Image 1 (cartoon, one colour):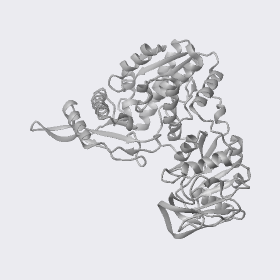
Image 2: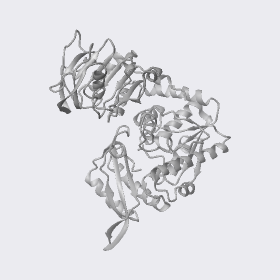
Image 3: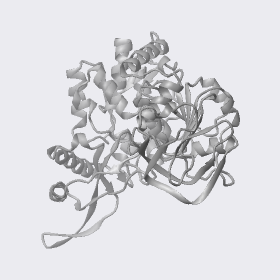
Image 4: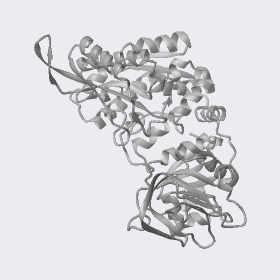
Length: 519
């Protein structure tokens, strides 16, 4: 697919293994500048080919002084492209360009006071919107002891003599602290100064511009061909369908596949919303037996995802043939899907059914208008397109459906149990007024049984685990502190109303180290 104009000169975030690399990219986008994450193995020539407006070097867990520490192609510094190093990135600039980075036996972690210095003829362009002394978020052990030749120190702390450095003539800057973290006072203003005043970026990455560029790119890609869209009823596929429909109108047919792995009542809801409310050309394929049969005796989650991904494609191919051999398939693939499924830019965490789960012999050419977006950006596009709130703000649901919320083999009986428990979770979360506050809230069914006592008799039945998290983009997440009274109602209702369940547990794992979904 042709790259839209508003992504043609991105700010590239080079990832050195930082826990905050995705957050840096998001903060750049929040300044209305398009950004992408690339690996530290990228070469200067590869970077130059992307024509970036600027480069940000992320933090990382290593010391720049240890053997095997990730390095940057030194020719990058000679490209004339502005560079901002953050934490490890700042130390790497210092070390590679002739400065000194030492371990002083005392690191800095958490909130730290930074003092700006006047080492030079003019104040730093980065710090025009912050006071002379301000609080930042630090997370480092080594420190820059001496700036490289041609650089000046522009900030210090009690334990970091060079907390910021720069060579404005070369457009190279570094900060030891993390401006992308909300605990850094004026952090976003510092990033904006780099983006606007150093890189010369314009705040052109808006949802209106995204829609305009996507519509143009979709039309250029599909021209007069027939297109089908895999519509699940979730926000991603709904926004993707709306974008493509805006671009090509009646050339689009949406295909809703009832896999038998959906939430309770979801098939009827999709029919009512998209066929009746929006008058979308919708084909409803009832394929529960097919999917459940393909998953028979499959326990490994990666195999589940790949089987489901391939089965989806085969169903879409059959639907396309019935429609006159549609050549293009629209998917609601997002940027986090690409990162987590594993590419040359990122290690695989799990295969998303619409990325790593696709078969090699697929007959379709993909149309993925949301491929460069985080979830909150997708919601903003949906609102801009006029989609209703109940679709735009629906909590994410995995493409493989309940198959990856049943930890073990998938059967019709287990799906029925999980659908009933999950419906109670959503109902009680809505009742408590928490639905919009949570990124996701759902039930998980592990295929184990536990002993219980019900009606003075011994039971041996399944547990249900409740998962509820807060997040901005699903790249990281924290477990939600649900009120005890909500947890009590959930436990009581699930045990009393769902046959085959005798125990309820609550997952208090953040991401990382866990993932949001259990499989």
